Length: 76
Image (cartoon, rainbow, N blue to C red; front, top):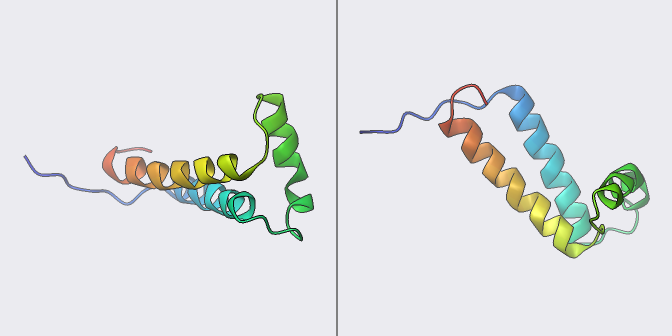
């Protein structure tokens, strides 16, 4: 059995890039960009998460996982 990776859909790639950018801003605090992500912080607070370094690393990890899932599972 061999795997035949498919290219992920554009929506998947866009979401992964957005998660990566959010993760980069929170993992390495860029003071100029943190106020731009205030709606993301409000959304995270509604889910019980605090916008800190841990959330940044989680977002970057989920970005990579989303790209892998998008290339291995058809339709994602």
